[in-house]
Length: 240
Image 1 (tube, rainbow, N blue to C red):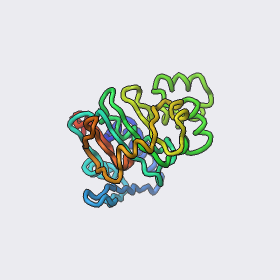
Image 2: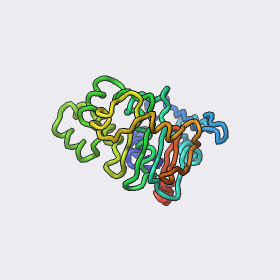
Image 3: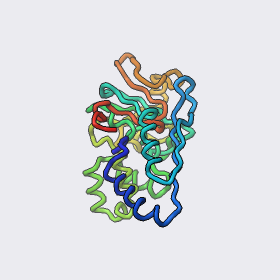
Image 4: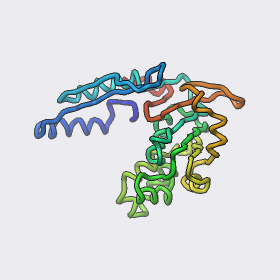
C-alpha cells in the first residue's frame, strides 16, 4: 500500500472520518510536503494543505508523489542507505531504509545500511527486548510467534514492526551499526558488516543520491531514506 493514496485501509479511515469525526468534532487536516533542494540538499516545504475535508490529504499525496518518490527503470541489485547518526539510534526508526526501498530492490539483491548512530533495536526497553528475542524473520515466522506468545499478542505494534522491517527473505539486509555487535545484529536476522570498513568503501561525504559504480559494479546510494520512497516504475504503472 505504500505510495498509494487509495487503498483499503485508507478507505476505512476516510469512512470513519466522514461518518463520525467530521460530524462530532471541529476536525481539520493540516499537512506539509517536504523534500530536499536538488542542488543544496536543504529541506524545503513544497506544499502546505489546510482544510476540513479529505481533499487536503489527497492533494498532499499528489504533490508528494511528484517530489518525494524516486521511480527507477530497473530493480536495484545493490543499494546503500545512510542513516544520520543524529537522527537514527534504533532499528525501530532505522528500518525505514528497508521498507522505503523494498519496492526498488531486486530479488536476491543486497541492501547495505550504514548506521553510525544505531545502538539499540527498540525505542523503549520492552520493545527492544521483544525485537532481540524474536528478530526480523518475515511474516510467517512472526505470525506463528504471535500465535504462540502472549507477549507479542499484547504488543501488536511490535509484531507489525518485525514484519515491516523484514525483507521476507527476498533480498539480503546488511547492517553496519556504530554500536551494536555482530552477534546482536545477526541474532536479529540481519547480516553484519564493519562500519569503519564499509564507510571507507562508501564515503557518504562524497556520494550523491543515485547510481554509482565501483569495483563490484553498480550500486544506488540514498543519503536519507526517511525523506522518500523508492520503487521500480512498473510497480506504479496502474497507480495515481
